[in-house]
Amino acid sequence: MSDFKQLAVKSLRNKALSDKHSALASLEIMLEHPAGIGDHSTGDLHNNLNEALSNLADADDRLEALDKYLI
Image (cartoon, rainbow, N blue to C red; front, side):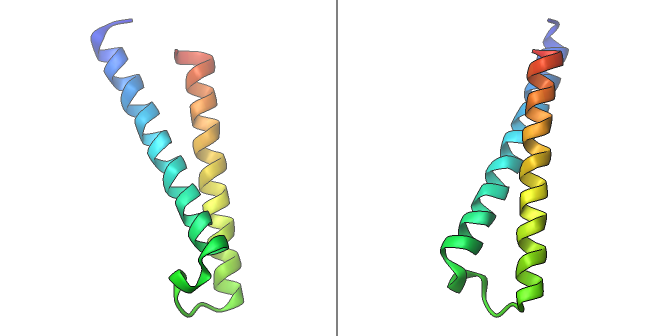
């Protein structure tokens, strides 16, 4: 693999890992430390939980695709 390709794939992988860890942190805060999220309505909380879950699934999908096709 060329140096450029290695750097590009590494960058993509690092971004996906960062997004994954960010989503996991958000889910942890919302589910385990609800006082840390302030005054949110139930609807806001469910929307935020769904958004974090979608971000987590997206990041996992990107990591899987990188492993399958580019690494």
